[in-house]
Amino acid sequence: MNLPNKLTLMRIILVPFFVLFMLTEGIIPQNYLWAAILFAAASITDLFDGRIARKRNIVTDFGKFLDPLADKILVISALICFVQLGWCAAWAAALITAREFAVSGVRLVAAGSEKKIVIAANIWGKLKTASTMIAVSVIIIMHIFVGLSVIDPTAFPVQLISDVLIYISVLLTVVSGVKYIWDYREILK
Image 1 (spheres, rainbow, N blue to C red):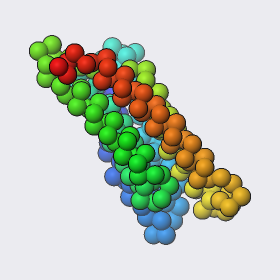
Image 2: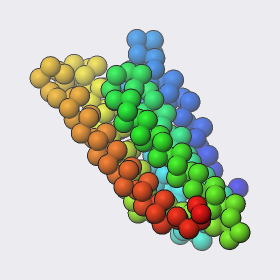
Image 3: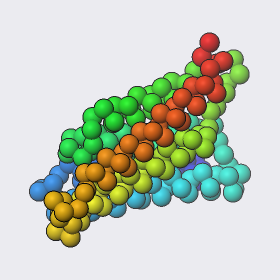
């Protein structure tokens, strides 16, 4: 297994630990800080795996499939934690999750078609992933500062900022999902 695929697998392996820290407020000291560190580490692997694969000319079909799947696992896990904590509306998390399943379905149909098409992420999918990862990171960081009493949530609009970031992610999620389905509509017939 090449280095980019190992980095992608590392992103998946970090997810349960990220979830553990997200949902252990009052049990593990500085749990959101640890969650943020793990989320940042996982996000950084997403930056490097593709770059390394392209630079070393070791792009594989396995990597093209696994990389977006790892992103989905990480982002959906974060959004589920956010819903549990009351940081994100359930409808937004459900819409993002539905798009992820729909695009994964298109990818599976394409891979199983006569042409055995492997659909790599397009620019809209990358923008969606980047916006969502930035939103998740900023939201966690704001809650770290709330926990440290650096930010007073009654004076600083933590929830409003969180909502705006999630809504931007939802918008990019819908646009990218529609684009994927439109671009590969012939395969779905």
